[in-house]
Length: 447
Image 1 (cartoon, helix red, strand yellow):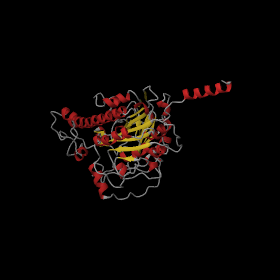
Image 2 (cartoon, one colour):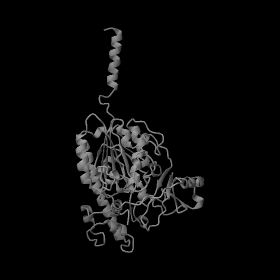
Image 3 (cartoon, helix red, strand yellow):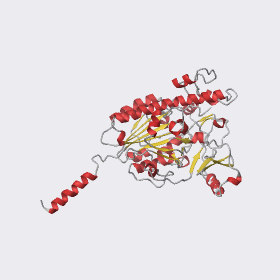
Image 4 (tube, helix red, strand yellow):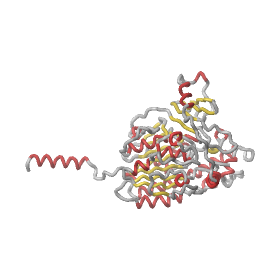
């Protein structure tokens, strides 16, 4: 054989060895657990054994120990997960609003790269009314512009998602978003709760319907140690149900032979007050109980599991996932890529913000321009003209704001950042349609 032919065949052989036979990009499975506090999971210190499937996933994942939501409200926070923008930027700042079509979502970006896209969500109004359907080819509910009614159960979500995973088009990567509503109120009497509440005969003995849950701590249902314990049991019972559903979904992924080809992300849109600060619920909250969420990222190409203590935010998900999937990361996003952390490299601290929803319940006093500012290792809250700073390492329950002499030298600059956070111009809110009001009232967002 001529020398030039030998050289050519040698070069071809090297290319064949260097290039994987399957050049298809990884799939992406995004699971959001509505209203799930970080401390609900064993991986974040819960000793109750409520989340065996999620804890197993955590042992194979990068666990971000200090992830924060941009707002403790479902529609806005999910919009930030899908756009990489703070609510002040994408302008969906309550569960009454909708995402403007001018904002490009993760699904749209991946669909443009050839991905099959699907959204199977429990709170279907996020799609039908909130317009978070943008970029998804397959949906759990048609886009009508109207409320979809009370959320689906996780069982119904899995009945849609699992067959789709099995029947997806081979040879094309997919992006699937699966959402479970179980940890959100109202709270049922799950088997776990029924067992743990034996002997308790208070107002939560049969569960916590919406009005009962939001009545906790008031004149009708004052807080007692028994009620605090009971509501946590009811909540943990729903978390156990969500964990079981995630386990079924992950098993379906493995059964379809997709586990080693799929990046799996599990997080939550926000947390939930269960008596902390004498409050229940979440939309009003800038406390950690409403904002700190779990965040697990398992990339099968990065087999070493690790924990990352550096603070991160849900606004970081879009740039992170685009980089991990080999796509271009836009420079105009609010979030930053965490791909270095997924790959085992150090991650610098940076400032994060959190907002409150721009509409409150009638008759409930609320500062709708309040903002939280995370600046390692501190957190500041600007609310009703007061600027209070907490050391979350020493005071994780946020009970003791720092005295003036304890504040950092940059306190004035940080207060200005918080003061200037919101755009100055705000339009008048549109009146609620009766069917929207009825849906939100059933979930406790309106009285």
